[in-house]
Length: 198
Image 1 (cartoon, rainbow, N blue to C red):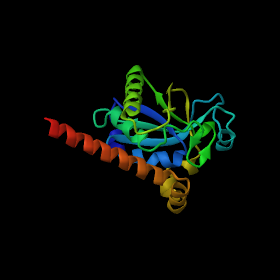
Image 2: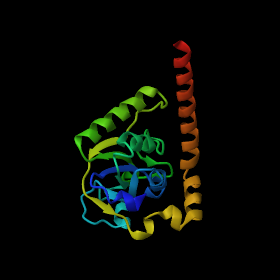
Image 3: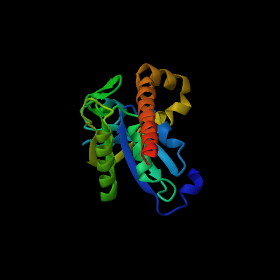
Image 4: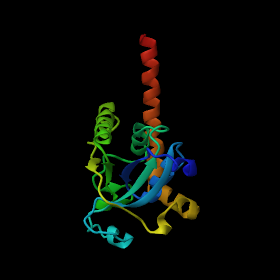
């Protein structure tokens, strides 16, 4: 997909911060219409930061992923749905075992349409009532994105065993299975009730 994808002229960018960027690459990487997913740093005030600098929590950067996608094949709303399904949007301290400003969640918009769609998706998630705490994920205008060091790129492919241990040990995997399972069940129940009421 990626080779053919980059031949198109209408490609767009999206960026999301969802805690450890290792775990945010795979959910987007396999989607049809996604050309590339890069792990990196954004939102900070230091140019070309290193992993060690970002980990200090003092540069203002988020660990994030930047996605190049074909809007004719995949809609931005789909990317938003995938993002929300991978995070705990109620944690103001970070994500799962990783705490600190660099691990907080955010949606970075590249144009007004993305901003509006992001705000609508956040309101929709709030209205669904799955969470007993406020949704704290920020919606921020995109700024310079710096690719992370090469060893961080596609980490789940380069170091699959360590990646699996980390995803499980951090608590992310169990959380995703639990919350996504509940949301899917509630959505199915809602659809059934809608059909029965017609």
